[in-house]
Image (tube, rainbow, N blue to C red; front, side, top):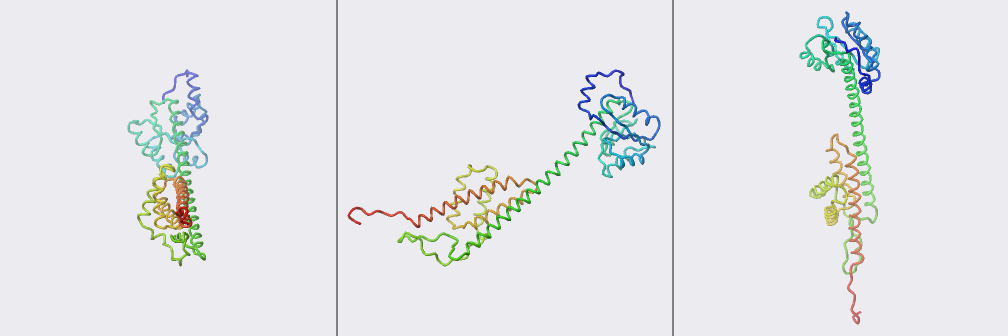
Length: 328
């Protein structure tokens, strides 16, 4: 390994120290010999960062120390006949260890670099052309990559848990809405209750006596055209939001009112379409869809109630022609 120049620019060293870890604990695994004694002292003399180097002779001692102590990085000397670093790294990765590993040796880097990457090491440093400073940066980059990889795994796991929670919450809200539909069905079966509006008696200007109640349409008997239109409206509403689909919503309300669809059937249609849409999301977020769907059904129910109210008042208080004077 080549040695650095005797004098190092202090400003450059301070700038580098700001981006390097303040302290690194490294395990150096070597086959023995002079390199195992010289390298720790050479790295310790660098002023870029505080480096603590523990040494282990051979793969067995190195694995034992990795089991007993945590290390920021692992440095492995490659000697084909005494210490096969590639085989060691493969065994380390196969055991589930994710410490950053830098391999050093005298072999041709053009051949060793891809082999080290394939084995799971972070990089390969050629002893004849690597300075202690470059080796420290290689270790620091491996530590940074390992830190970012762990943070990424943590964020991915947190995102998966959040999405699962959102889908469970959506299922819970849909179940509550189904319970609401059941309550509406119980109310509609009460004495003297009817699902639809009474027919107008044009001659008397008031509603007829409620006829004998017939069984309401089941949600599954609603026309497929009606379900398709509501499905398209909901998908557009999720994307565009309120205020942009006023005409489409008014047309749908008119269609529901003209078909005599009850509030319970409308709610059942809404729950079925939302459940289908939620199941089609897969691993994507369900919160936005549920918020927009709740807003849509609220707006739909308000418009539907207003339409039925106008129809009811038209039946109870129909417009009447006044008599001319003298004809009363």
